[in-house]
Image (cartoon, rainbow, N blue to C red; front, side, top):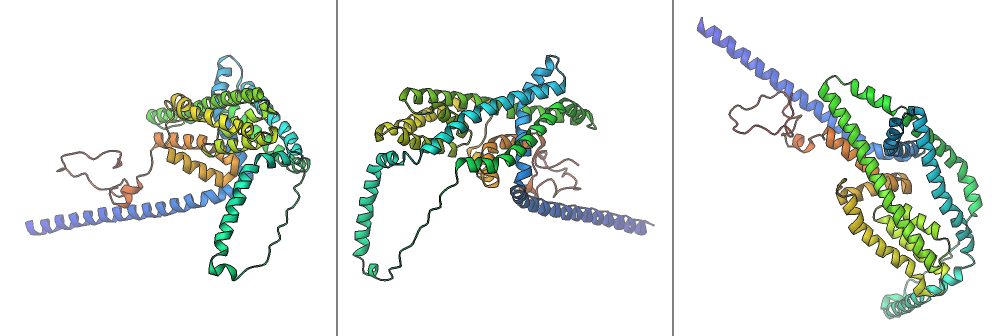
Length: 403
């Protein structure tokens, strides 16, 4: 009687082990397919965003702006205003600020563009020492090349370069204005409806969770995303406006034309890390050469801006923003390159806010343990396995998922 019973128990144990092994293999196969699909989706999303920029760009920009305006919305609601009126007030304030910024930059910029052909001679005179140095260097290089034996062979024909006359600024504005106005109107509608339904949407999102812990986590993620995004954008806006106003005052003291426009350009470009200040310095150098006949005086605007930016970037911004939002510089550079490739200049402006939002969400929700999965130590690999009772140290819950 004992032998058949032991054989039956042994067969049952083998069947259980086989079933467990099949379950693990099935889970790993499903995880592999999910990983492959996720990698394919990651590679496909950038091209989809770039191809659908006319839709995704205004929607994304509107959502980022709306998230940054949530503290203002809540301030109005705490004072008794309905959600719709609070949202409308936020949109009106944002639209007024944006209109003032655009008008202070665009209208003087049109005048500068019309004056550029007339003052191109002044720019040439300011660049005369640099051009002379380049010409001397070119003569020296040509002299060296002509002395080489192979320099007399294979001389090609002269190339003809045709320079097309650019369209007028008015033609450019009339051709692009309707499309830009449609996108702006669509973005404002997205901001308004997002803000007007923010309180109800947040409440329903939290209360719809199946457990108290899930509701608490959802509320914490929402609060962290709003706080991080609004804090960064509000602080950076204050710093950039201060830098632009200070630069405008200095340029007015130097006697440079349209100092308010240059201050606005400095403030806007300073939102773009690394590349924005470089572009602002180059534009100030061009504006200085147009405004001043003396080349040394023309170099004062970019040099003053570089000095102010060095103080702002190395002392003020890290002291104010660094305590609240800490981001790896490599992630900033990658995010800037990615969004600039996807959506151009507007994408570069949205790069840091989008990085902050994604970083906050992933920090609260957690990220997949891909490395552990690939090396058979991750959450998906050990699904269904029993913990080793002889292991003296319990596994880290961050590395091994709970069933």
